[in-house]
Length: 194
Image (cartoon, rainbow, N blue to C red; front, side, top):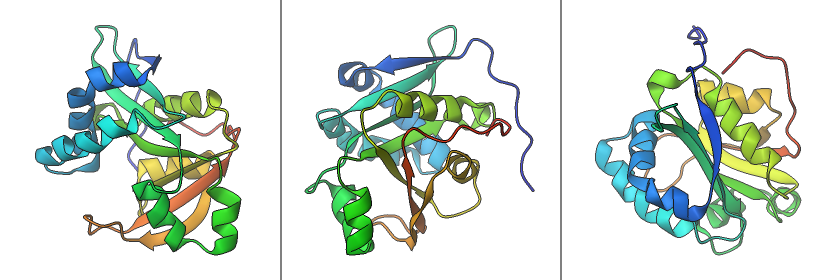
């Protein structure tokens, strides 16, 4: 059974953040990451080490969801995927040569997109994702997400993401993931907030 959609959080705004701005809010963002992914709190600190490196990657772009009082309640970021990057190289091995050639060239790798659980279902994730996708020069966006019927998975499908790999196991996580891709601009549907 799918949870009901929530009313949008009053006063939520989406901001375009530089790598420096994101790095300045990294601890807050990684707490959101751990909470949204249902990981132990220390996982956020570990992921923060990688996130600090990500801000230096070419094509870095970030969006932040903030309440009226400036509280960070969601974020999304990524960069141009390139050989030699952890995710790119793992996904490259999971794809056929044809799929890799079609999808892994000059694509935007959505590294993280998370909203605090108490604010999920109000359309914030959709706003973050469409704002990011609308502001990058890439022709495709790629991501990985737990391979199950979650709000996030339904959002990605609703915006036109297709399967590139399913039931993929990344090192360090026992859950299977789906690797998805979408051509840009993203499809815009009239579906409810996800």
